Length: 130
Image 1 (cartoon, rainbow, N blue to C red):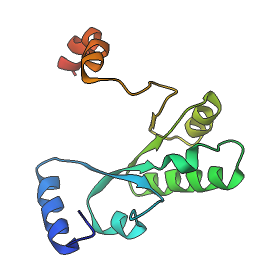
Image 2 (image 1 turned 45 degrees about the vertical axis):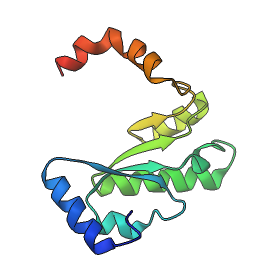
Image 3 (image 1 turned 180 degrees about the vertical axis):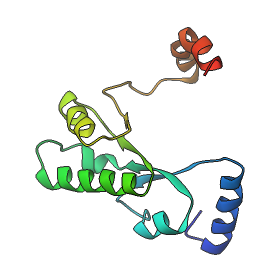
């Protein structure tokens, strides 16, 4: 969406942000996710692509890039989600970098909507009171 008409996207996203909507850049570090987007658009969260997470702790470069992205996002007052977290070692590294959220098989495999409702049911009262 953003690549087709950036000026229209900027106006639209700013209007939606004024209404309280928050936006995330998905798969940050790959494809069209650009540092320029962090500067231009009202982004509140960066989702670090799983390609940087999957080889932690074996690949030092992935650890350095991930740590740098987390630190940069935090300095810009953005939250960070690490995608593709599959091992306790990856989670420990991310926690050590103060990553805000993790997403991946370590926490849950994909579930159907019906199973999601069953998982959520015991916590509905907590969510209503939040």
